[in-house]
Image (cartoon, rainbow, N blue to C red; front, side, top):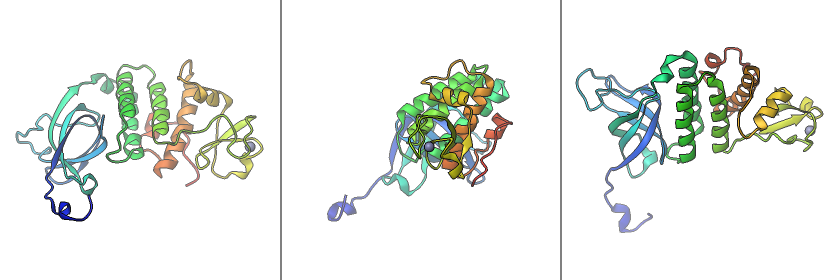
Length: 260
Ligand SMILES: [Zn+2]
């Protein structure tokens, strides 16, 4: 809307109702927290949950925990970008208690939440990524090998963010022979001939590259999964501007990126 009498229209708060996962909780005041939600139809939404920290009875008496899955109602200004939304209702709809049974499961889930929070924009819908996240959290809650689910989600998130790595040819010369290094800046592989000219790079084994080229992560050994996690985490760290906090907890042996 531009100019004229319409610009003087009084705008009221509107409400948005959606399914959501809790990606983060940040203290806001003595009684309130900012909840970062990843919603099915509205993307990432930041909202204040007032009174959530009071020990008195509130509508959020049951609390809103990290990685909870539920149905949320928030009130928002017509100009959504102008400020935080406010949580008016929250009802947990699913309980993935299995997530908390093993440390690697919950760390995998926390990693997934952390990278999603950083690589998605507020109010930018990604319904497919939401569905992938629910599937990933469900898989993690009963998984013996959490890393396979995490690696699959890393790939989905990168694709969704428009940063899926190109793995079939050298970004510099186009050759598909002896692709030995990945460059986050270039967004794909470098060949043996071209990689010496690239400072920012990550060496990966032919097995890891094969795994990453597959449509689905199957028949991967733990070493291959760690290799795949490492290179995708390296790419994600570049896009985030820092190392994801949960990366070294989830995979203690993961190399850190060396070029800032
Ligand atoms: Zn090349």
